[in-house]
Length: 154
Image (cartoon, rainbow, N blue to C red; front, top):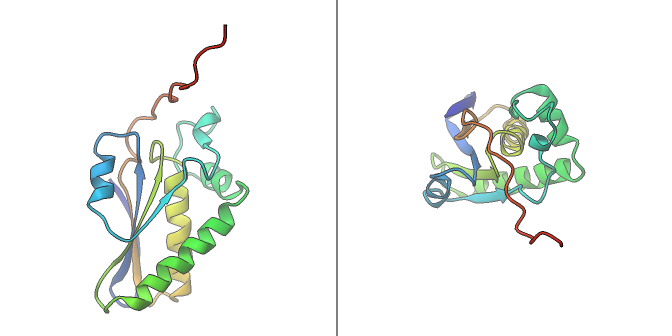
């Protein structure tokens, strides 16, 4: 696991996790959490489909920019940030709010979006509170493309 820590004057108030749902154990990470859940598998195009980006991660500038340039990505990030901060406003001080961002492999889309939401939330809080981003599958091998479930045509 790799962690990005955005320090605040106060304690960490939000933990954002990126996961890859096709990895063993991902559903355990998902089931052990609470808070918001964002599944990007159908929402954003997959950078792993581009051979030039396949072996990079959402922390690499080219992948990060590719994901954030996907139509609808900026709106999705903005809406998720608003929801996360709204929940944070309702919980007792000292309790964490959580967001889990998922994609297929946990190396590209979920990483980039988790980082973008974290930076946006941290910025909206003016650095008053910290935000941690946990990338659970960023260092795992790139997964092969899933098999097409449609039968072959004669």
